[in-house]
Image (cartoon, rainbow, N blue to C red; front, side, top):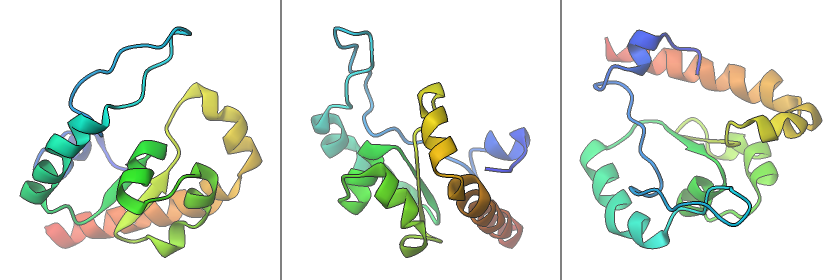
Length: 127
């Protein structure tokens, strides 16, 4: 995001809102299960309505599907210009995405600098 820890942890500026408000557990291989749709349906809209976010970072497939109705992370993230500056679709940060990042250098070369510039401008405008 290109912001300081002080800004990141300032609750008046940044909020992290999960897709579900419960931990769904693990599958047989030890991976996280998907967020239960019932939890998102019950809580997500209510929380976001109270917050009125000016910028939303859509981290991972579940967030992108919920907000944008898309089903392919690579295509959605590649089409970031269609959603910015209000929404920024991002891959889920994970060591498993190392290959994805290598195959998609435009993410670090184009999307991240644009997103960081937009966030910096929005934070300056709030002062």
